[in-house]
Image (cartoon, rainbow, N blue to C red):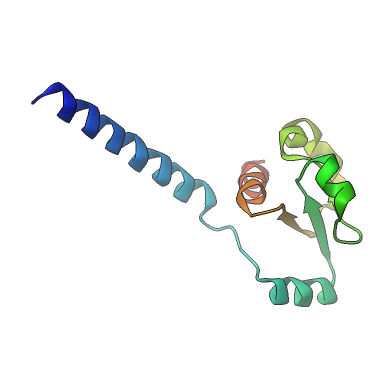
Length: 108
């Protein structure tokens, strides 16, 4: 096996591991469309968790959402105890941070 083949296979294995990790972390996490989210909000017993930055939050947010930026979530998870028994729905700008936040919260 040549050096270039070893590098190629190593990169391929790394990509597969990254995708496998993401899949395992996010399985069992429910994703909502905007209309499904509107229905969940009407039903109540839901807390919206905005995991964007404070600047993004100030530029516009969903009324009643709780702001805990993703980078602060591990330190502030106790702040969410008061919402025990309610469904936490995380959101961000494009879905990647909210998925990471949901995976972190599911571990806790």
